[in-house]
Length: 251
Ligand code: G
Ligand code: G
Ligand code: MN
Ligand code: NA
Image 1 (cartoon, rainbow, N blue to C red):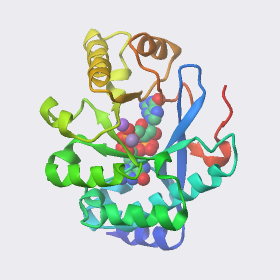
Image 2: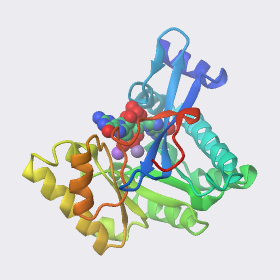
Image 3: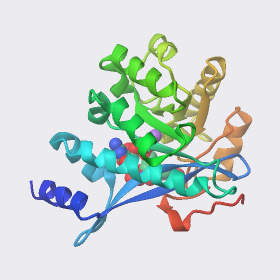
């Protein structure tokens, strides 16, 4: 309860910050970023979203919090649009279940894009399998509406949920994100290697993009590249950092 009061205050007093983790090609050139929210608590220091997102979901604070994240991400897109070196960067935003299920979710995003002037083609929304499986038809409608104006969708933590291929086929998705739990031991665990290859071939046959998450070594990158992966995210390429610390030029 104390943390709930604190989080409410954090929203009012602008204690939240967006960190950005680069999404890169095999040679390390940045193509976009994933926005990852951080709470700069006046006493506790930096609090991880793993700690406060679940609380925000329970209390409903995820609605204003999620809106704040989307606003900040759109403002960043607008800032980047002025410079030829950065104007093609995309920003991926994690969307929580309660946020996505809100009846006005699509309307809020449309309004936000209109008022900020952010390019919808640069905004990617990350959804999880479990979020999509409840109210499947409703989810498809919302996604289609936003996709028709250029917003794209990624399925986050892919492989850890329960979605069947029949569902996957019907979702208006652009991209799968291979969960980091399969990447971690991809060089030593034959099962993880098989899962990574399967996701890549599935994505190819369904004409979906793929980002491998949690890439920490050149060896993992090389394996995934040989298996047909062309987009990567992970500490090997860059940790989540404040925008001023992003390395925006190709490595
Ligand atoms: O950023 P890590 O850096 O610790 O993120 C931990 C978890 O918090 C991840 O599952 C990530 O998807 C989630 N997360 C990070 N930022 C956001 C956000 O802005 N909104 C939501 N809903 N989840 C987020
Ligand atoms: O659930 P989602 O995939 O949105 O969350 C991504 C999480 O993974 C964040 O907490 C982020 O900080 C973390 N992360 C990003 N790159 C790496 C990595 O290379 N290794 C590990 N262990 N975690 C990572
Ligand atoms: Mn994510
Ligand atoms: Na993920």
